[in-house]
Length: 179
Length: 150
Image (cartoon, rainbow over all chains, first blue to last red; front, side, top):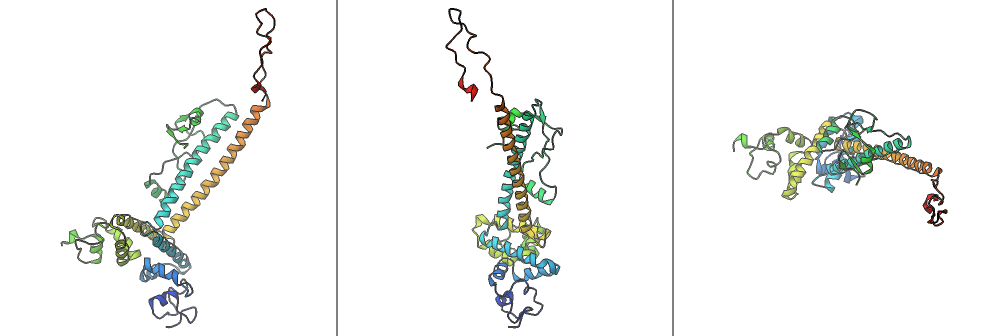
């Protein structure tokens, strides 16, 4: 076999594909011959031709990161042939959702405590529904997964009013948020 | 088979769509972009292999997840769905930090509250002499509850 751009030995891709490793082989910088598994798994999921096309469409300085993410996705797909990376995304979304709920409860609690400490006996108003995360494509994806809207606790915005007693009972907005 | 009954995959690949086409349940002709995206990233041959390796009842979910990953890769050619994972991990980290801060504040505020409540112990408002005995003298059997002085 011919030499790769980095030496005499072909890169892992050309070794697996059993072809000459050209000096300007697009795979050689990212699939060294000492890690054959990396290309093997990426090739199994995406195919060498598709990887080559994807890399060619990217500027050179972004190709290393692209290869890393492709290998990561390929590994995830081999581990979980049904869901791949989407399984991890789903899990993380649930975690984020739970943390947002816990944060909302904790923020309501600290407000109530501060009110009690100041000996202020008044109705507190909590803001409605502004989202805790930025409004972008990630938000639209998360909304499609039925994430509830939460408080951001910029105090005293106009909204439904809540008495601290309802918090003490462990409910906000009529449903149990502390469980 | 008429062209209108071919699935999106077979239309894109310009071939006959047999009755047992592996793609047709998951790539209907009504959404050609769905197959084009996934074919661009994985290739029809790889998709076919992946689906055939799965039991039938799991193929729909697999097709959906492949389409989602292809969509992410189209939107972000460098990081794809790994970028989404990274964003979510960062969100989780930020939320955990905020939650830890607020919980620490709650602990401090609760401790302060308890300290304030303990500074002035409740004073008994009578010393037992308020209730005369049946002879009119001071009562001797009354003891203020010990909990007042805890």
